[in-house]
Length: 269
Image (cartoon, rainbow, N blue to C red; front, side, top):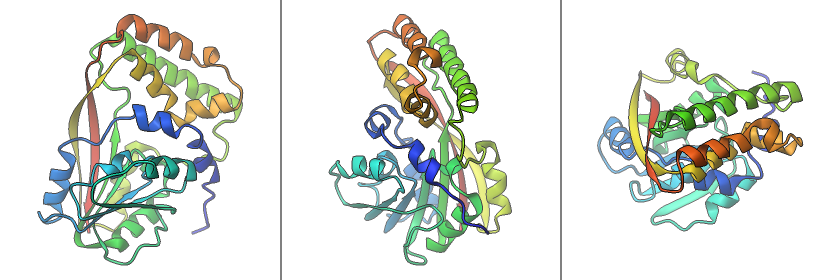
């Protein structure tokens, strides 16, 4: 297989690590229980988090596994991750999902949060299978966007802004060089990979608080939005100003529960 250039993907997620870490959702509370049981029921010796970004999905495992390693190609994201102190043995390494540099059969669980669509699938599956012990589990999970805030006009405005931004990315060339694989194909690709004995998908729901600030700023945690801003497209052209107005009108400053759906595709080594 020819080497794929991921430099545009890495650049896409540079320059806004603080926003990403502050406003993105955390992994579902029930995720660890599910994956630990699937991997045999013992406290994991090692969890590896591929494309770990700012460490949101890595820190989650700090008190649930003996050792945790986050793999991330973006230096900007890794710096943000390393700025936190966490209990337990947690570290970060530069690397890609298809080339972690870790030893064979070293991990009990390998995770990938909101990132598999930026990774070459077959190479990622092979690498996950290589570093997993027999019976270990690989799990890639993605959130449905936007969360259900309980205020449909705010949710509608968020989706409309995303749609507008996607069109602008095509028109401005902000998508040039980007490597992406559709999320809807994750499960079929995992099953066809030949890397796992059993593959399935479940949906876990997560409740987190949010208000007008969080929903409007959540949009700024999108790589596509930041790519447009870097190209000089204004917030007004993207629709960010209008989104902020609707969020303030509909959600206000008081936090209320939001409902996230996390789609977890898992495979057993």
